[in-house]
Image (cartoon, rainbow, N blue to C red; front, side, top):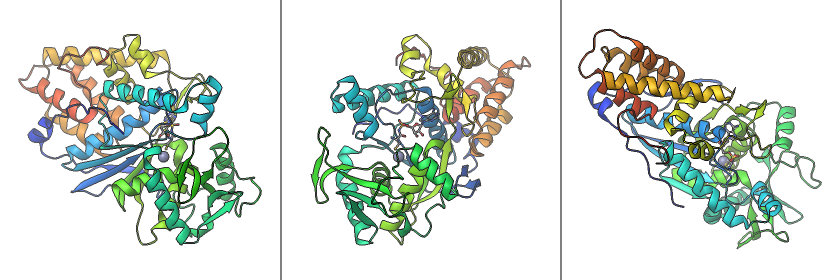
Length: 416
Ligand code: 5CA
Ligand code: ZN
């Protein structure tokens, strides 16, 4: 489907300072900081929205983490291929459409469009491929057929399941115990108790048509795809094997990323699926994880409609390390707004020599995207009332734009 227009990303900092250090990211599988492969093209898959009630600040924080990674790769001299999906058919979307009396497709289209506008306003680099589940059904069917050839598929009352026992490495992405897997599976859309399953953790690949639900006629019968296979199929099709990072929020580590990885691994036994798994922490609000199902949302579109500068929203989110889980409050936004004013003023005034600060910021981001440290470094430069050095404001502007995605000089008005 259509993506959104990417913001311009200046290469002035890279031209002036040379390439930044290669990016290292914390990997869920090894539980440690891992260098991403330097040189050449970096390939990234990030799990996209299920389009109802988008875009809340939790979504924005997760996509911002991966936007920073793309910027860090580019600063390190790498090209990036970026794929993101849209789960435009799934249980929660269909349930919302039914309870509110809307057409599910119209709901998905409207929320996806809102998401595009929010992402563009927040200066998020757009994916090269923005793929819906519905348009990807042929790739999903192909992958399920491959799994079938590997003997990893069975039917329960017409629904097709993936047998996790077909993957000897099942569990290695999350490293969770069997009992933790079972409880998380039940919490995140799984059906451990369904009679007829061979293993409680086996997950749905293809759901046979049910009355009142959308369905597609395919070689697998008439029905619709399960969730995990959607991402495995889209990622494999558009990125090939051995792509660098599978990303998303930490709520997706298990079962979603474990299952997708397992399915892809069994379907293509000789290939690696993702080399690394990176997760953003959860943003909370009013004491709970911000979530569509709970309804405790702060929407990006609401803040924009209230006249908040999207750059201040971005700075508010950047004040928290991407792996941290934290709680949004009104104060979070006030701090972001003040910081934006302070930076814009400092750049207009000119500042002290910025050569060291510029190098520091790029170094901080290359090491597990330490945006809070980078913000502190810019704050210190902005507050330093020492002798003004020609060109330092331009250098700070270039680095802040390239690495943090905050445009300090051009004219910014709300609702871009
Ligand atoms: N469509 C699936 C992924 S394939 C999905 O999880 N959709 S979602 O709309 O629920 O979430 C979209 C993305 O935002 C996911 O990467 C998810 O991990 C992330 N996310 C959801 N809620 C939060 C939150 N409160 N804080 C941070 N990230 C969140
Ligand atoms: Zn996904």
